[in-house]
View 1 (spheres, rainbow, N blue to C red):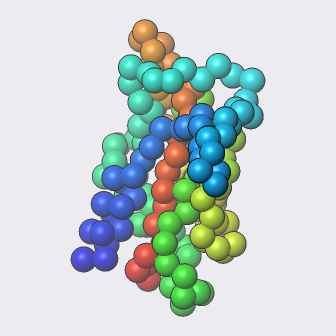
View 2: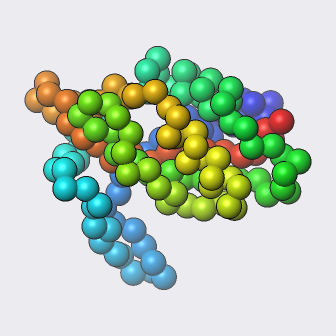
Length: 139
């Protein structure tokens, strides 16, 4: 049951990158770190090779964080750019859980295979993404 919940939470919450966020009820514009022009929205979103099921399997298989390390459970949200070549760049923690979980989430994204890039007008384009990685019930 926990694996199913983990899969649903992980896959169900893949978001595109945002350019605005809220701090204490006020909207704040987030400046992109990249010199690349990132088109939003795009005709075709970036995809993990093999799709969402493969992404969930990758996270389940490769997550080395253990429940015994801490009593904290929850999610780390990692932001990154999928380049026009499918490479993952500008990887950063957008929502922290704890230092060990954050470190593992970054490691998981850094070690992912290249993604299938976003497309606009039939051409690959860079796209900012957010991926929540759940640390609930892993053993």
